[in-house]
Length: 201
Image (cartoon, rainbow, N blue to C red):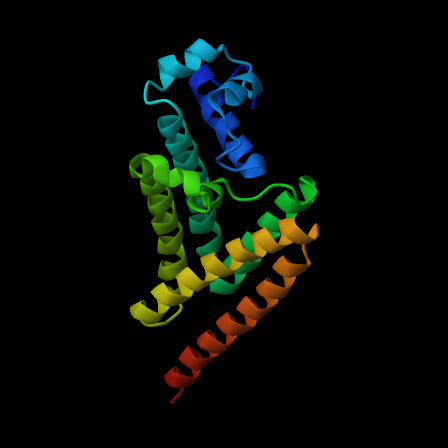
């Protein structure tokens, strides 16, 4: 994050995402973000004249885009493989941070203070979630599920994994993520088996 190859503005956005991941929205201040990014406080307001709402919105957008690209790549291999890869990614992230870090996008969604200026921040959250649902839904449709059910299952997968991440943080281990992942795998297997059965002569 402090690599000199990354421009100062990008460092600030990355620092904001990292603080959201570990401290949540309310505890993420512009001053602390500047300190973490090793940038002058004045430069923060130069790059983000909209202040904290603009900085947080861009951090959410960046995090959302990173996850969306990962989901697009992994779910291209199929729903089951995509789910396993997504869970493995989160398990590693949680273990690396001793279960003290979560999703920066959901950190904003879960914080009441986002409503103080909900237009930019919550809009960024909504856009990120839509971007995550798309590759999941597309993968399920490609596997043969009807579009409506694929969309519902995509929402369920995201909600279940994000909820499991919160439980992992509360419990200090990744057990909840592993348990939720196994039930989601069984759900997907059953749904896809039903599709295969319908296709049999």
